[in-house]
Length: 408
Image (cartoon, rainbow, N blue to C red; front, side, top):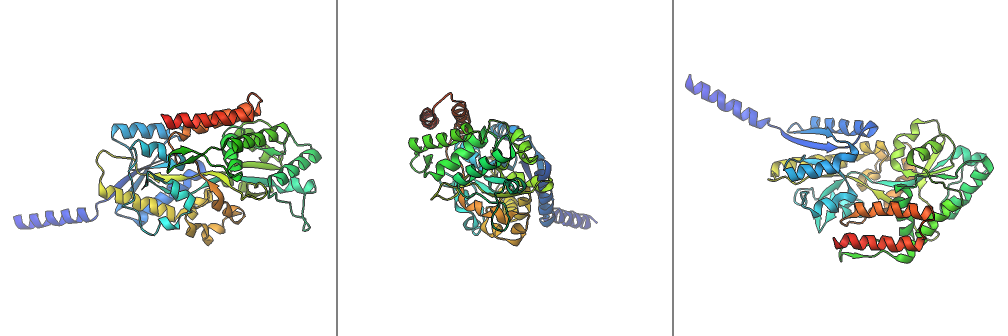
């Protein structure tokens, strides 16, 4: 009898061990349609991987990075967290992330868009698995363009390819239809950081050389960029407004063109608006480079790294990246080339119209202190628009701000 009890105990122990799950906690800040997609993908992963249980915790978007810092310091962070690509240097430089070079599959890194996966590294080590890129793109109201007579031989709305074309088309529609603006756009981060980076890069400018840790900000090109942005506002084709106002104007047929991120594709197709989407225009002779950031998965640093947990976490984040055609329903562009060219992605509404943008994205520099620098860019841009600072003064102050951050 005693032997039978022992055998039953051993059998139960073996069964329990065989079916033991590795629990992975994941912090996200996604809500609405994005949040629904993430939750459903996590459910699918759990169903396909009975040995791993991913448990999601939603943190307020504006609070996640502070909470994550606190959790790492306290020694109790989640196993996985979402993180913008631009934030990687700040967290990795503080030792707050786990390097995953030795855990990722050999075939996944070569499949990435090079500009994106390069930024997932810091000091030669891989710290993140990107799952998308969300660049700045140009939306246009087909109905308004047609009313203004801006059509081709087939009667289709003309799509601007250069900045000169965009400005001319916008002024034409604005004048003929009596619109408040020709191009609606939020004048904080959208113009101060995103439009600045797009135009400055098209001029051939760079911010920073990660290899030599030196500033590469070209004062003349930065000055020209501020002059360009100021000219848009001075001409009246753009006016100062917040994000919600810019959105409202475009969604209610009150602006012919609209600069915004691809995340708007999660909303616009559900509205009664005849619109199109394309890449940001280019300077004549340049490629249509545009600002972009990316959502990534990172593994926050634990006091004692558990290899089994790390393996399970990396398995989840890789799986999510490979299934990013589903995530792309939120409007974001995949960053795995195999997914970007897949039927599952390209058959989504209008994706073929802007999929090529992924080849011209310009992520934020891989440098510490980018959060402070971009905040400074928003402030400088506002000062230039309001005439409180000249483009030359703003360029010099931006250069000094970058020097100050690197000196800390």
